[in-house]
Length: 469
Ligand SMILES: Nc1ncnc2c1ncn2[C@@H]1O[C@H](COP(=O)(O)OP(=O)(O)OP(=O)(O)O)[C@@H](O)[C@H]1O
Ligand SMILES: [Mg+2]
Image (cartoon, rainbow, N blue to C red; front, top):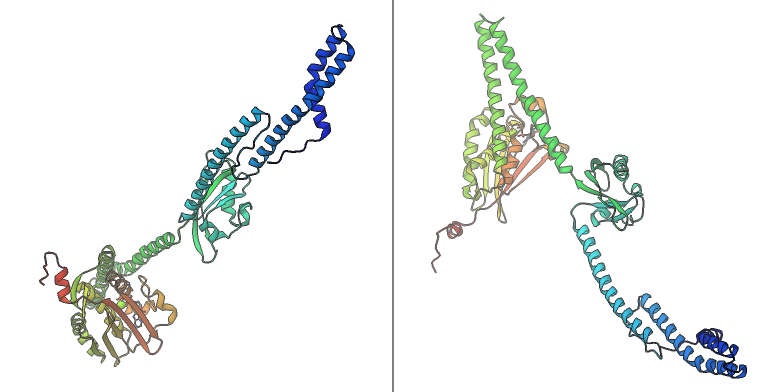
């Protein structure tokens, strides 16, 4: 380090100050006649001349020390302490400052690491999170919140990214000392979602001023399930209510006005029987649906001949089809029709599909069942030449109680649960359901099921089986 050039007037003044005690002593000696004035003046001048270089060196050391401290605080790397000409104190102080600076740097590195770890943890949270200070300015925003509300939000008022008056009012209330609160709102950022936001005030504001946290949670699926459950209960009750009121009405009539009317009794009992059958079918379908739902996560694993199941289902419908001159055709284009599945459930699937195909076909039409192998799957398609289904209905056909023509399906004895049951069974089999339809031309409902591995592979996999070389 270069020795600094001190201004002359500073050097002069400092030397004068350093010599001041000597000047006072010489002055006192001269006044008290112990020393002659010329000798005292000569002594003072000699003292000044001798002190000047010493004071200069000393001041230089102090300035070097000051510049060294300035370098350290300027954020330079750890510098070697400079060498000093005279001041031992400056030397000691420099060494202490160097150690202090090295220590500070280590702490700073640890602090930066901790802050970047916190940021990564916040960014890794699956839910969006925003933190605001006492004046509702955003102090932190994690990656998911940035994806939802946009970047460059730090320092801005929360209202500029979250335009939800209810949520903002809850944040203000929380900042004013209110309790934690939960607000739900519909967000239309990108896709429409239902968001639940927890607004929590920190016990003590953080060092950077953060006072309130907003943790968002997407509850769209939850709300949709709740709505579906409510709709389901309403639909099921409605479906049961109709036959029950019919039954009650006829019971009353049979007890009163038609008490002694033999002919009316026979007719009414036939209607009552039909309504009771309808209720029984509905309850059976509901039970079947809930039973399949409960088992949906366990995949059936017995080899089943899907071709044979389909054939026996078609046999069941033979008479009904013949009555309406509908032809039933089975085409099998695969050497193996073995799938891993549950025989009864697959029977239920094919019954529903063939039933629909016959039900919604004109008299004299043909219903074709086509079975083919697609890679490692078996595709079973039930193809009819019926009235077809408009495209807008296709995505909703597997919803419970969804019917294209409510009155017509009801008249044909349908509960509207058939395809919902089919969908759940196919899901349980890890298969796929595809419905294609052209209005006026017909509908194709295809089920794709994973093929069963060859028998030898199954035997090898069975517990206790042994391979022979
Ligand atoms: N092959 C088809 N052709 C025309 N419409 C169909 C066909 N299959 C299903 N649909 C329509 O889809 C609706 C839902 O079918 P789904 O099998 O779930 O109920 P459903 O047949 O009315 O009653 P269920 O099967 O419980 O007796 C039907 O009401 C009908 O409108
Ligand atoms: Mg059906």
